[in-house]
Length: 276
Image (cartoon, rainbow, N blue to C red):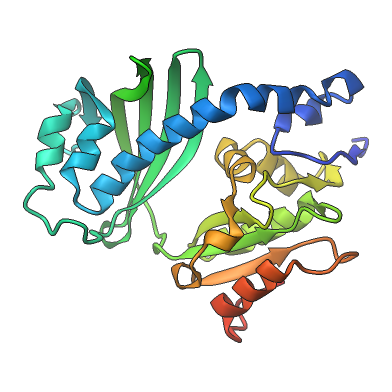
């Protein structure tokens, strides 16, 4: 197979890999300018539900849903098990309000089209060796996004609930996709939940894409990873205590960002499992 190497800096938009047409170069930014505010609004709604179900807040849970929304939950004895938002929120009423209950929620995808949206989130419960996938349908009603339907599925998992942070430096030159792929593989194989962060709070950029490499293709075709690269965390807002390990990915022609260096040192504190 002919080796295909493309040196194009990415902004988390995998579509650019499929075309080298210069006319498309500005298209992702134009699309992002239109969708970004709505994606952010949808993200806030899903995060309200995730917070409420992780910290026993019935009000936060119900605020995310249209009052007559359908919630299809995973139940071992019932192929179809449906609850209303009020019924589901009531499950948390007698629990310690504001205390973390062991549910780790994370948004994995958001897609917006006009006044409707879909989203997906994973719910990790290590104590039950359970990984749930929630799929949402949302609609914009009277100017506000609301979840109108949610369905959940479950798989067994060995993931621990610990988080690994991959700090990707965008400047002065982007890192290679292989660097990112190697860092992700190492973090995920250890059973960690992987999160990406940038110092400039912008989408992860990368270059030197080799489409003949299976590891890089796996990254590009994984919708969850590409969403995370397109919506990374802002490094300066992170708490080191939230992470078990960290790795800095950057092009070694430049210097490591001081925000990254400080965060990395605080997370790792001489831990040999950390890398850079």
